[in-house]
Amino acid sequence: MRVAIVGAGAVGATAAYYLAKNRHINITVFDEGLGQATQAAAGIISPWFSKRRNRSWYHLVRLGADFYQDLVADLQQEGQQADFYQQTGVYIIKKDEDKLKDLYDLALSRRDEAPLIGDLKLLSKSEAIKDFPDLQGFETLLYASGGARVEGALLVKTLLRASRADIIKKKVSLSLEGKDYVIDGQHFDTVILAAGAWLGQILAPLGYQLDLRPQKGQLRDYYFSDLDTATYPVVMPEGELDIIPFPSGQISIGATHENDKGFDLSVDTALLNDFEIQAQHYFPYLKNASSFKERVGIRGYTSDFSPFFGPVPDLINTYTAGGLGSTGLTAGPLLGWQLAQLAQGREPLLNLEDYAVENYIVKTYQ
Ligand SMILES: Cc1cc2nc3c(=O)[nH]c(=O)nc-3n(C[C@H](O)[C@H](O)[C@H](O)COP(=O)(O)OP(=O)(O)OC[C@H]3O[C@@H](n4cnc5c(N)ncnc54)[C@H](O)[C@@H]3O)c2cc1C
Image 1 (cartoon, helix red, strand yellow):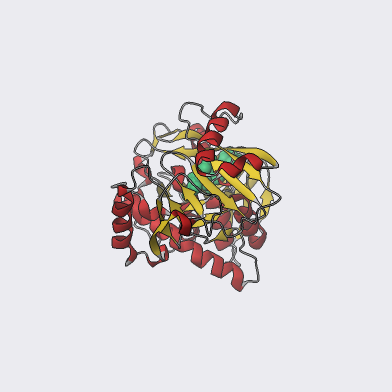
Image 2: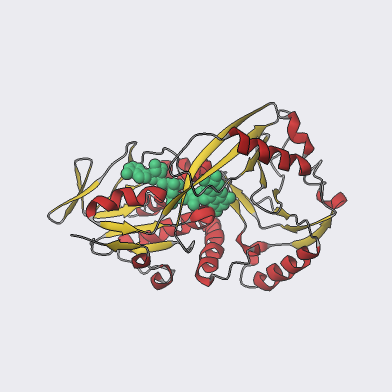
């Protein structure tokens, strides 16, 4: 079996990793990589506090968060490092602290089904700063020990290395020759399209119309030579602002959700400076960073913000996942594994009807 995977973000790299376990499959991964959402992601894995009423979405992200445990165990069993994933907990801050009790109750009601949430506690400021020194701008916050952060670039690197797949770093297109798919002059019998926000660019020439739009996301990574941030929890104040500590003295601040910028990858300094000011309200020490750099990526989202995955209509042995939006690092590895299952003719864990591709990808001409 010759399988092509187009796109090596969280979805494509996980699909490659799980397909590689089947020795009868020859895998080639094509990835341009420019503006990849996975490498730009804030990396927060904490879906349990959302009040979105979309049940299929919540089911997906809950299982997606759980799936990291399996992925890490699978990698470690093979002697691979899985240091892209750290469960350092999350701190949730609300301006109206009465809302924290509601969120606490919501998460508590979800914990039987989602034990990964772990310890849930309302913490006073003096308790909270034991794990995140100098944090301020609140009296009480909500803590969940099961929240995690993922370094997207390291996730992809680890999975691709473990898959030992051929990786071709270029932008490609897809065409049909008889029963074969042709990509970059090579022939394949099965294709996984994990192209994120760019999926429409691959399918449009084949006569498809997509309900999928690009959303620009920017964040800034700050570096501190004097902070050991390895165990700091992720801080989630209200709105778009998140404060995400990574090991080695890195604290990331973001992220923007820009729906009107298309595939623009330029850095908007003014926007990120505004985030910096907001973040300093909670973490004034930010001003002591020794350096910083920006990351920009493009998320793909659908008109109802629901992700899709499954076979592409009218294309035999072609599978896709998309529309992951701002929780795609949470759902992406699970969906990548599901695509690997589908490509091998196996039953997926998730119900395909809940994430029907046909709702977002329609063939308009032959
Ligand atoms: C700033 C930012 C912050 C985020 N924060 C979070 C977060 O905290 N938590 C969370 O769960 N999610 C977060 N997300 C969302 C998450 O990152 C994405 O939803 C997820 O990574 C999408 O994964 P993907 O594999 O579908 O697509 P991508 O990671 O975008 O990968 C698609 C790849 O396909 C390649 N490609 C496309 N077309 C072609 C082609 N024709 N030829 C070759 N290669 C091609 C692209 O170059 C790209 O490398 C964030 C996203 C951004 C941008």
